Image (tube, rainbow, N blue to C red; front, side, top):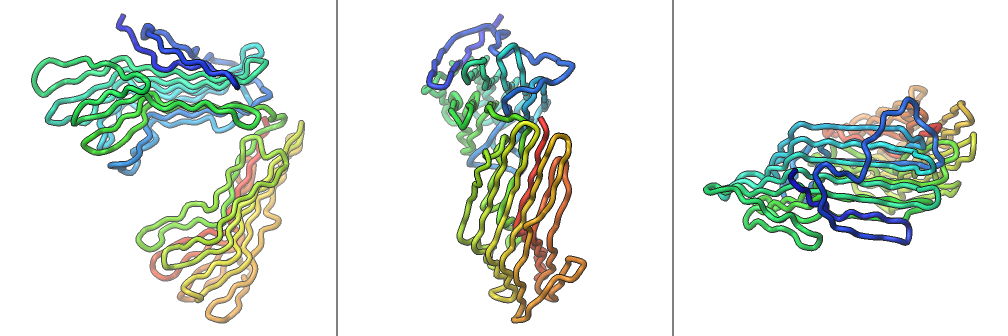
Length: 422
């Protein structure tokens, strides 16, 4: 059996970190295969895991090149959850061809040990061919595990690479040495291959761990790729359920020059809430190209729970938006998404969602009963765009569609909240 070099196997607990470099048979694995379970089991922990085949930075970044074989267990308090994704083959310009990409995620409880696992494997990577030949990497794998052993939180990572082969344009193929931590393999004119980065971190009430099997820079395209990325997290203190949500002051799309503005300033609800604390972010001003200026942006959130009860809200606020250098000015825009779960009963509403004054070309406007206001030649305004979603509610306080021919859409006062029972 061909040996596999296992890189950077790590077992860590909070305050303790040990690193081992070993050689092992290709069939050896630190992580057990996820077992099929008839039913999930509730734990006292919030569990998260994710895996993806490739993450690109720099150089040639074609649309859709990131996120190969991506999957995620976003947040759960239950053991026995399993997800997977598989991609037979994908070609990424500037990199080459990746084959046999597989992500496997699962949560597990054995005795007092509660674990969140993530593994990703890539059967073969063929670096884009050049006049020098072809560079192939086989048997790439990473594993991340965050767990509680009944006494303390611990972390574990593992990366493996089976073989790296250079096939020259002329002559026999060459098996190259697998890189070691801090000692990358450089194939002149083709690629720089290094052991991937690993992160082990203590977080509030738990730990998180992440690892990339390899970090590859393709020299001709100047494209850097992290291969076989996995990450897991475990936190204690989710006695009733889990939270999801976000809030922001503004989001815009289809602006001039096809520009976009993502959710700003973005707050993301922690999986188990904020322990009743109000968290907020603020930014003074955002310019939406030459079309609009948004001032006084805030996002705010709170989530708390106890056995049998959970409540949360997300809030997005904008003090003022100025469109067309004073053509349209709107003040005091707030969107709020409120959710409470008591036992099996869910209540949700948008109370606290408000819009202040609306002025266009010196004239004051108010919304009609339809909730849609047309200001000829300037914009269409929609108030309180509210949707009931699974386990929660989504709110946009004000949606503005510009009538200047661009079709730009500006959302203001954005909030979404969900509470899932554990």
